[in-house]
Length: 374
Ligand SMILES: [Fe+2]
Image 1 (cartoon, rainbow, N blue to C red):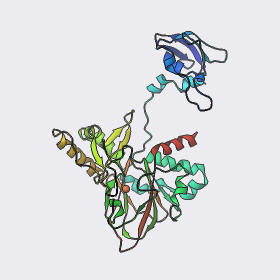
Image 2: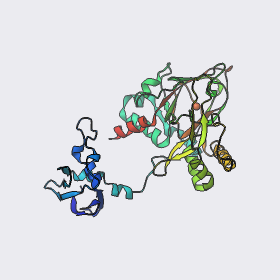
Image 3: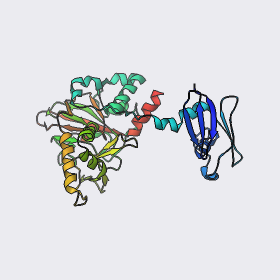
Image 4: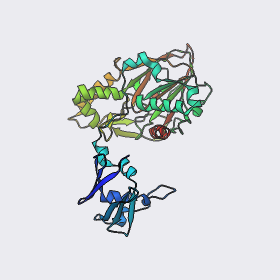
């Protein structure tokens, strides 16, 4: 375990030299703000208010006490803070910022087709054990895709399985939404048409994080599923066609809900690809069906359309796309802001096709995984 061997006071931070030679800089205001007594022991919310001291606050005295803790007597507020050395080391932002970022995403292309069993999981495993639940959550988080097999096929039976993770995300399509062909469909999913690879609801400011398509009946001819890892396509563009990539991450496109049953006008601007603070892939926003009439500046419209065209072609390229057929009792689970999904046309006269769809926010998937891993 690391212990503190030396402390030096500088103009705005304490430099701590650890027994293993590592060095940490701890800013004075950061230290005062993170004093262990700053938080309520029940709510764990910070009760201390940094505005109650000035930005000139600094350690009047500092030392390592007999228990190895850092002890600071502050220049203001008549307060002494005691910091556990393990906590300081675990939360050291000097060391954290030196580490190279490792992406949680395992990108995939068409080769996953030959290894589809690697993303399948038995329903019983999820229901009976936390290990099964963790395996499912890891597939969702790292690969963005999982196919549950042998789930029940009763109406709304998906709830019990999804509630192993958390509550579902409600939308005006209701939960579950019924993916079935209906007369005068308000959404092309509710027809027998083929669906190009798309994400659901890109016209929301925050589109649903994960989607779950539970197959109850699939006896019609056609209606096979497709999926593509759009992060992998984005990565290909970043490495091979940087000019296209740069447009996709920088120019906001306009999406609009076109549902005629709605007494609301929902529309949003968002880039086709967005990145995290670490430059990793965050979100994809792509849907041919609900892209609105774009209104970018006339000087850039040509290159925006060319980039959109190129991205769309790759998102349907067989090098990246996998194809499979859902059977009753399968639940196709995927990151809706990373994977695109589609289906081939089906013949409603030949048999029935009925899927029930659910959404769960991404916070719930990652939050639950982080909790169970500890
Ligand atoms: Fe969809």
